[in-house]
Length: 378
Image (cartoon, rainbow, N blue to C red; front, side):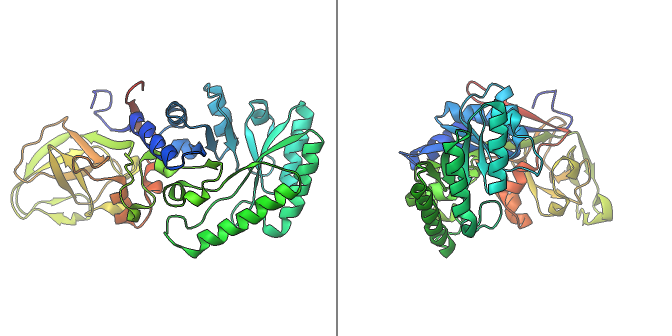
């Protein structure tokens, strides 16, 4: 680690890995356009960084959840097609429309608001119509779909919108063979045919990362990978898909000491040395993204091997057991990474915590954690 980062922690983002993963996914969906999802600050990896790397690797479109994310990408110089889909009541669509951002509509009310704003600006809103096929979050309910489609056809005829896509989102694509996948696919096809009947001829996108990797029948004209872009496999039970994790969470040793047998470590004295041992202090804790619930359940990569964290994880620091090995202040500590050397991974953290690796990486970028981009042309 550089001196700049030695005092705290750093997220190392490998854009070569992101480019590699986009290439893997695009190859799996050959013939379909790839929309790379960079919501939530690029799943913690950096929205602009990921968008640029994805486009360099051949992605045809970028997707975000929030209007502010879309506008920020445009202001950073991203000119590729860009879609945004999740809004709050009263959001102003004007900035996004001025920047040529494609928007999603899940209701007649939302469609009318977008169309009215486009008309006021003298623009044509490019629109993705979202059908709820069984996830029951955003998306138009099936019973209301005909009204939304007819309203969209009217707005298109009036010159206020251009319907460019029909889309939906899968609930259980990461559970291979789950019956809901085929059920959602059937509902999606019915919704698309209804749009065609109304004279709309848009493209379709349904496949998330898991479906890109396992359901080629659902690739249609465009796929929409998210988590796999970052090298985290949504369906590891399907085998190795050749993805490379892009995030490494690292710090360094700030202090070393030798303690006698009988000495206990950290709050609550939950761990006691049964013999003289060397300890290494690492200046990261739960304020920096290391869950306190990993106390006594995690290890780090330090001085060429995995070493257990002993005692409770604190707000600002944790302690590593080094046995009789000599480690030095400033030595690099890998809390998680790709796993190539045997270091812990974000997926291991998630498994230990009973969650998903999405939650781990998206929660890592904190005020005291820097982010360093590495890789060719980074």
